[in-house]
Length: 463
Image (cartoon, rainbow, N blue to C red):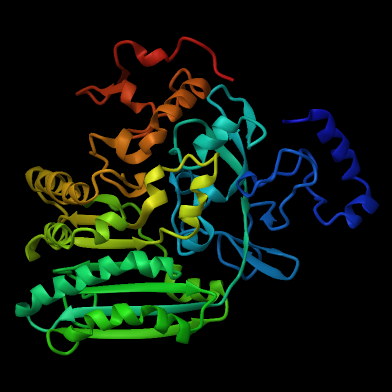
């Protein structure tokens, strides 16, 4: 339990030079509160359980990538996805994937403590010891819903060496598309076991890409995956059984390439193969997604093949399919964290699959609506048919999903709705697919209005 008297006492001790020098867990700054604890590691809400590998602020150490800091001379890194993504906002609050999450957990699960401004204007601490329900909600329960997160204390992890693989293939001729799809199915089926052996990463494929994915081929598949703490020799051995299954296509129907790279630290790997700056302000594309577990990927090869065919679409659609292969590992282990509001579907998903289509600038409304309809009713539906009982990652999902409460939040939806009512009883915070938005309707004029009954909003004061 939170002990204000004990915290006051320790704050006094933290002004004592001798005490601080003799206690490596003590903080020299800041000293305005008890140190955050790592409840997911079993630390209780008591003095003396300060993790020794946390960043006390969000600032980056000199020479390190965004999302990193330094403890003494040891570089340590958080799990941010890209250089343009910070760990305070929607990335973390929606779950947060990145190149290190398989080994260290989703972005939401890195948060040890947060400062949150509520709709009332009150600044509160959210942690396992203070406002634990709010702490649960902001750690994966969705952005723009419960308050404005203005500060977080996050975990950081020692850097490791990384063995990476870049693997790609493309059909030699237009007559070899069937072989391409067969090889693609083999790779999807292999992902659960590859994940269990330590691999994770990102990939993409298309049956027609305006920008070639592999060499000069407009149809192609490529992934970049990595295994932390492994050598190239070990990575090759772990991938060998998968390589053997697709080798029969190499040179007969597919152009295939494999390249391995070794990096002494995570930052070298990140800067070389993963730390890309993603485009912003894109308004000419529609996307959908689904979280895929072992059952969806391996139990029914025919169903998997049917889903992949639907996702491919005809070449003239230029559909892009992106593979976020970061599940398993610590993502699964963190299912035991009682303060994680992340969609439970993440705890069984090896792959977060994103499908997207675009349209040319100046396209008619009918053309644009046709793309949206195809993404929602054909391609995303194909993913739902393949994996009906999971859900999707809310930050990269179909914003027209009529079942978003179940798909985005899963079994946590009802609990999050109660937390929303407690901390934002007047419904100040809103986004179209956030918790609480189900109580609103959008009028033809564009006005956002509370529905009949108001869902209890506006009837009482929050904290």
